Amino acid sequence: MDTHSEKEVKRWVFPEPCDGLRDIAHAITAPRHYLKLCGSDEELRSALPARWEIQPTNYFMVATAATLGATSLPSGYAMELHQTGSVTRATVIAPDGDVAASGCAAETRDVFIYDRIETAQPHRRKGLGVAVMSALGAARKSLATAQLLVATDDGRSLYANLGWTVLAPLAAATIPES
Image 1 (cartoon, rainbow, N blue to C red):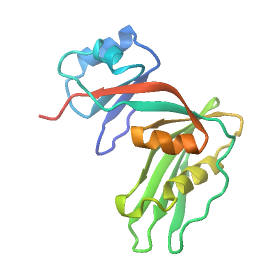
Image 2 (cartoon, rainbow, N blue to C red):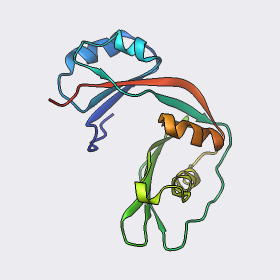
Image 3 (cartoon, helix red, strand yellow):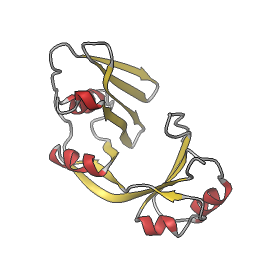
Image 4 (cartoon, rainbow, N blue to C red):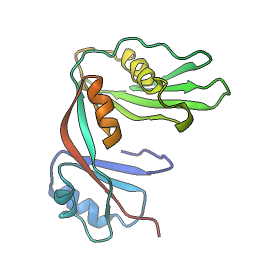
């Protein structure tokens, strides 16, 4: 998947170790390309050449509730939603005009995947991340599709409190910048 973000150019996600994972790992030599595996760090490490560096473990999670329900923003904050095809982007704008929180989601026939849910440090603990999730979830075309996301270790407990369950650890690796 081409992500073209500041942190990564492209990512590949594998449900299990396979020859394709090993082939891509050997072919890539540039930094900012990520390989992710539903599995342990050790399983991923065993498929990679030495130039790859294992990143902190994340968690592949599924929602156990149909929706998060509507949430309101603190006074002065505004929500912007933009939809292009199957991708929806939510952005919370702070009273000073800065981006306070953001995230995106993509929907296929079978799944609704939340990605890059982030809240800027000065705006944390105000419910903005939950508001982004709620706004994205409200954009779903089908309430029957499974809702998925990848959470950091810090995010895992937050999402668990919102009714999400860990499906598997998600190991990740990249080639460090020189």
